[in-house]
Image (cartoon, rainbow, N blue to C red):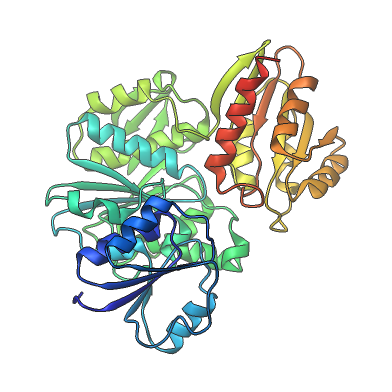
Length: 448
């Protein structure tokens, strides 16, 4: 990419900020536009000191024109945005910060990309921790919360970039290519953003873009949607399966995980429990073995890794009531997984952004649920769903109130589970803010 060109960054946040810094360092003239005026003031001042022009609060019709050579779009912004549509009319490329960063990666960097509807963050983190334990030069980045552009200057020819890649990021990639791609599973999600399940699946498939037989795909062979979607990809395929014998990757046999017939670890030794976590562990094992990691590093991490924040995260026990934060459950499939993880009486907090989603997929997972507490924009529909299922429901005006209701009505030995099955954007900046507030509310319960 040549320098001294003009780039329009649409959406600031972390990714826009880091993209702008990288662009400035490469000699570009940069303009950032974001409708949200609430930005990190220090970051705004820093970018302005570099000569970046920042326009906040609206998207003026005359701001974007044919003087720009490229748009760097925040992954959360729709491709139907007026600036994006205008760029396409003017044949101006639209990419995101992942694609931008990739174009400046040193030649010898190996890229491991992890996508899927659920399990991305845990799998990505496990891979990173194992490779780090094996003393490899590895960096963790991507949708996990660390913009890829911020790592370009740190990468060396022998570095390994381990990245979580979302469907939103995969919308606007062109040249981006991994050496190893992982597809954990596929189920309906983000249909309001993509418009259809087929489009969503086609975005996920882009994790295998530009693959040849020299590249590796790690595929969940227990997931029929995944198998169908990857049927015609050109990668060398490796698989992981919890339920079926599989000699081309990871399998579970007699309580042990094997990779290519080599025994790796007992299921009982893995610290994070539940089938979904064993699947995440198998995907991480497969990547690690393909990169030549010895078993000692793999076993050490799997025996000690406690999971990721906001994903079925144990908060604390108060009066023999266990509280779990699963704020990262922004879709039905994630909440199914969380509910499947407990056999004790459970109170579940459901709610958030109303995307018109059906909650029917939760019905068969409510066996142990004694109460649903509904909150957020979708609370009325959650209440209606609870009535259909003949499960008691309390409607709360806030997450704070929902937490207090759950604690008040929980009995000895109960689980109180925040697993909303909805995005957080109706009331919170993101699921992390929601999860952190829930933990704060739980911690405050002890003083009551």
